[in-house]
Image (tube, rainbow, N blue to C red; front, side, top):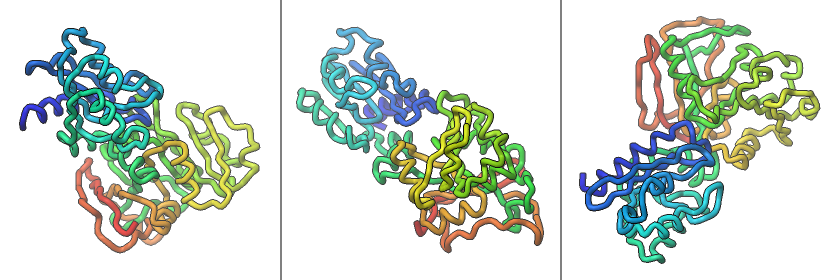
Length: 351
């Protein structure tokens, strides 16, 4: 690993300090280096707060910044958003060299920050540990490259490929696996279930990770069944936003608590739900099921990844079967044990 790579690794490590705090902004890290010495590290502290470059630069004096090198995991912005453009701050600071990990895929930024720095006479190096820098924000990158959220289908099934028993809530996974799921949810901006799961399981869909931006709980309720179940946790707890997608116009006329939002769908298609989430800037979606919802995603060719928790139990002939995925193998599958439950994760083919 050469010097630039070693310093970029420090910036990558710093970026991770912002995990679960940056919401729809990416995690970004920065390091200011001069004469072989690391003078300051910075990261994007929180959504809406100062960016990583400013967080690092403001720790130093003009003398320290003069002719220094800035390492940053993502291309500096060149536009006014919630914060002023970082490119102008870098230029004003008299930094002479900027080393960038990943070029920002966001159309507002792509190439513009780099061009502005070069115009000001600053030496710019790009692509240093680019893959590692991009791995900080895979959903952010996918969203702005493909203009839709990354979609993960998650299921917990028995050895005989069943989800549950009819009309009953049962727990298949080990306590260790359940703990992993509660942590896993925090990586996503939205968690989606169908109305059947909401009514039978009455889940809270919360995460054990403390964050000012908990995932939005989402329910597809085309027929408006939730009007008859107003006491469900998702509709009463007020601890995180709940969005309901429906074709029943009467559902929107109900007096829901402030944390509940009803979105009317004209056609009831999953593609319309995804289009709405895209318009709202939701970059990642964790689909917890049940079977009909997973099957609908599969049939519509929507889904990037499948996570299956396989439990060492059988439910027999009366068990509710899991959805039927398309033929093919998972892409780059990985396997982990959580207690007696196997977690299998991999990309979905044929989407």
